View 1 (cartoon, helix red, strand yellow):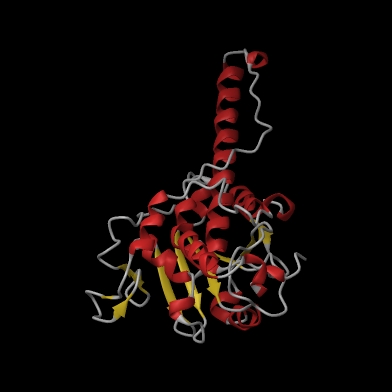
View 2 (spheres, rainbow, N blue to C red):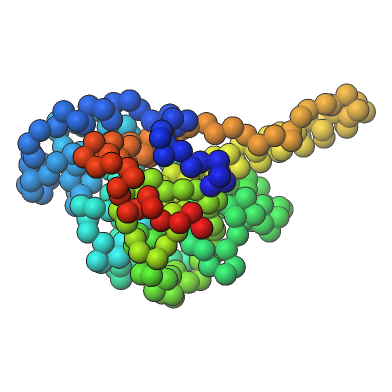
Length: 281
């Protein structure tokens, strides 16, 4: 997604397939008690990662193809962090850690880090590199990755966390530039610095498209092999030049984000919010 293609402040979610039940969250009135920790919460509990009973039937349950670990800076306020959205929506696949209490990641665990390090590759470049490195093994290219790590903090804080030896050794990937719709202002960073949940969504959009693309290539390779074996390879005419379309299967990652964006914009004019006045580059 090029930033020039996604700057749509009038209707930034129009091409996304987000469950319409987010509208029902506007009906939530008083805060309620979390059944697990007995704390007063509204919409969801940001420590137990559970939706409140009033909306639990409206909240989508998302299954991710990879496990997600979110490393949250200790100064990130739980109630304001969008990392919580992922934990609530993907309870079986997302784990939130507060730095410095994080796992000791092993390279053999097939873990990658989303961070713009000097040696970071695009998601497609990394997956293809892993496929070449393991071309003689039986498993498929996507099986070379099982876990992806995100850092939930300000840009300056994230650089300090990245230097931790437990993370520094991980292969890094970068996601394509996309303009944030996050309402929280951050000084000194352009508008393509995404909130954590936007970054997670962008990663899985790209991952899904790349997996579809590689799957098509593998299928094409097999068909060519079969036809070659039957001395009929010249009859194979398959157009595999176009990128797979965005499926929308992970758009519900923005379920709470979509609602809170709407709520914020019902209280404040878009043009008055400092976050949207930041430079694009």
